[in-house]
Image (cartoon, rainbow, N blue to C red):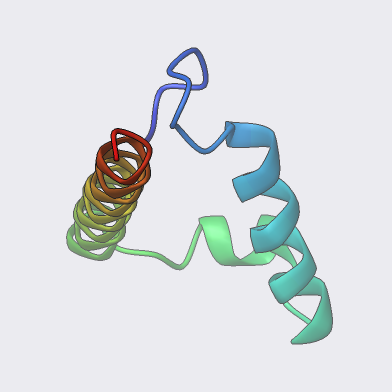
Length: 73
């Protein structure tokens, strides 16, 4: 996941809030689900989150680069 100390990183608290909101809307109890997820599924979710986090960081960095290069004119 993104490091909450990084200026462009998405704080973990925001991610936790969004995930818990999605679970709540879909009637998912996290305690019930924890025992039903296989280790392969857990690893796949971790990999997905890491990949998405890197994509977000890359996007934010490219956005900041474009903004900064636009201010040089």
